[in-house]
Structure formats: C-alpha cells, structure tokens
Image (tube, rainbow, N blue to C red; front, side, top):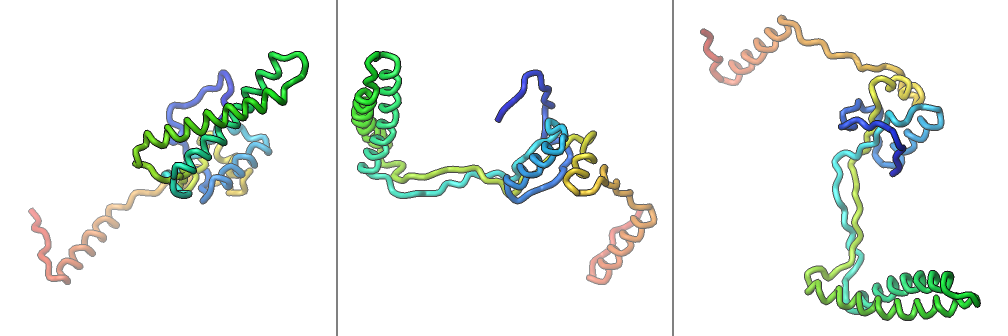
Length: 196
C-alpha cells in the first residue's frame, strides 16, 4: 500500500456508498484501475473485503528433517547475502564469489541449528506446516457520494445516483396490513388482541 504526503483520509472509509460489488479482489481492482485509466479521482474510492476470514491450508507434517531442511535453505540464503555484502564492500581484489560461498556454508550450518532448536521449542504442539491467507466473501468498491455518478458512468453502471428513496407506507396501507394480520389470526383460531 502506498500513501501520498498531504492526502487527507476520512476517519471511516467504510461509510461511503457502494459503487459495485465483486466476488474476487481482482474484479474490484480492475474496476478501480478502469476508473484510474479514465482520469477519475481514485482517492475517492475504497475497496473493502466483506466477511473476511483466515484460511489455513495444511501443507504437510513437520518433522526433524523438514525443520533442518527449512533452516538450511533460509540460512544459506541469508549467508549468501551476507557474503555478497562483505565481498563487495571489503575486498579490492574482486574475490566476491569465495566469500559468498563461505557465507552460504556458514549460513546453512547456522540455519540447520536454528531450525532444529526452533522445532524443539514447539514441544510437539504444532507438528505441521501450513500457509495462511485472508479471504473475503465479496469485495465492495465504495465511492464518495459527491463523485459516484461519474464513477458509475465510467464503469457503465448508469448514473442513477442517489438511489430512489423508499416512500413510507400510507396510513391506509398500514391499516390494511394490520387488518390482514387480524384476519389470519382469526382463521388460525387465534384470539385477536383486545382494543381499548
């Protein structure tokens, strides 16, 4: 995520009206990209994941061998990086490769030890390897009410904004609804409420 200096951000971005909803993040992202490509002020848009949950996929069983192998790989990577920096900044004869190889060797050894010690400290409480991700049921694209008509036009959703307000029921409709409920109660053998 990136931010610009001086940009003002409202307190609660989720109170903006919904421009459109998507089943996946890629659809929401594409809508915002379309708005951006058409010169729309995208700082007025928010993507909100709705009904977010954590999904953890179990990849396999953790064992001493797997702990050692994972430690070896991460240690070798870190050692290669350290060896590269030491080689670049401390030698003048260009012997970077031997220092990188030594870094890989020492890093791998330290990584194996670290991986095994870390696994030993779990005490068997987490004997599996997994990967977690956040998943939402849907992604809403929200937009400031002041520019939502333009956004709807760009996305081809029609410019009908704001949506028509629902009119409250008339007194006659309320009375008819209550009369229908009372008739249903009488038909079911129920006793209508007493009137004062």
